[in-house]
Image (cartoon, rainbow, N blue to C red; front, side, top):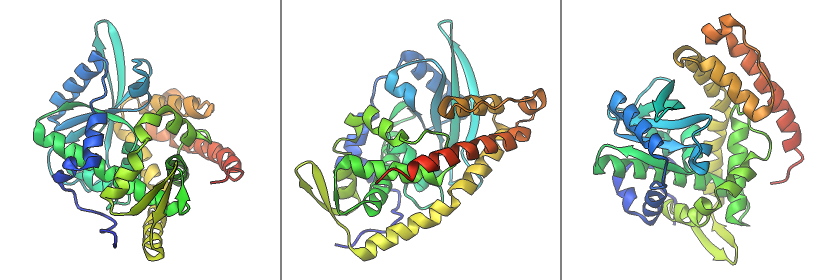
Length: 320
């Protein structure tokens, strides 16, 4: 059976598939009431359709550090560099919560999740766990679930195209995350893919077969491994799709960094904190760089290149 288009259309009926139902259950992960209140306030300010909460704080339940939200808006697809990123602080019960908030339309989010756009960050990030902490109505909920189903299908297709004909679920996901991290300007240490999989083992267990079913990719279970039936012509098509996006990964990251440096209040301090947290490299900012974050971009890029050189050296010694 031939595969459907590499960039499937957004269809809310994806929420009714086995994959959609699995994702819907995961989106109901419990969160601290303060996080739900924060999401509600963000949604009200933005006129949102849905708010997703993700990142390490979702897993740990901690309110420390910077919380991560995606605010999904009504309206048509956006053509500019997206998402819009902002920094917010709110006090709840005498506790100050800090958040990095990405804002974009649900329609753009879904199209990026499908693989139709050059961006890799949406489907690579949202095949990982997230929680739907605020939603406008049932229609918005179904649309969000369908978009996340597309993200899982896109990620799964690349995972098996990059991997061997037979491997464990974990090995396919590991190869996927290693490839997507290398395609972007990321500050994570080598082996970050292992920590993602170990910390979210329940989320990923059994997800790949459902995503392959949704993507019409034939597979068979062999004990604790999967055997993938992917014709060479289809594999070449997926890898060609990936090569085009891999080449654009770092330039898109630079453009988004430049945009965020202008629109992200407190962005320079946040970026310096993020780089130090993940790489151990400290970027010292002048008062002028803190005020005009674009001036800090060369320092950030130098730190990222330094970390990338060290990461690539270690990665070359790691087998698939």
